Length: 304
Image (cartoon, rainbow, N blue to C red; front, side, top):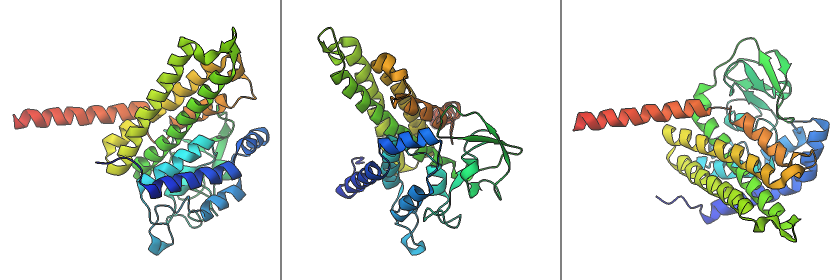
């Protein structure tokens, strides 16, 4: 089975990267952080017009008619650019919630365990609920992922597999971006008359970041092709680890600079922490994989 992107898929990814670089570059990201605006309605509509949310909707229903492998590439780029907002939930709501496919509606979801909902204040609909429930704001570690606690949790389990995979793709994009940030800083920052990247300890940090990100990339791409629930769980587990630990190692490479508000590294770490709790946590993924392993052992025993 070939997991390498086709030329059309590479062109799609390059087009999305160019679109986000022009529309949501670093200045726009920092402006969002400064103002606390976690959803830009104009950007949302532009993404909708570009087919971001209708990517997997059949052409007969006004969508682009592509599949999960293409969606994963697009969401990887959104994760790399740290685009805020309920991208995954709105994408999943295309064809279900009026306006979601075109980016005219912002849709959140019950994708966190329990009664917490992200972006509830900006949402026009919530997957797993019949309407938009009232909620009490709670403190969020990520300045661009506001959280609300609602009285009764809804059920968005029907969307869990696709939601987990697309969130894994966001994590993958963030992990790959922190590798770039770490390597660039290691090549620019000098100590004792040479770039810090020349020191073995820094080289090892960057190398481990790259290995984790590439392993996660393989798992995410494979899960997008097969759609197998176990492979999706493994992909989410690996991508969460690559994003969280990659951001931690990137902070280590940046030293004291990485802890400053001006550096973007902490934004990747905070977003990765939140995403690791969305759709499928590490504990849930490990439990599913353990059940599949035990099931395969029992089948092998019965066959023997």
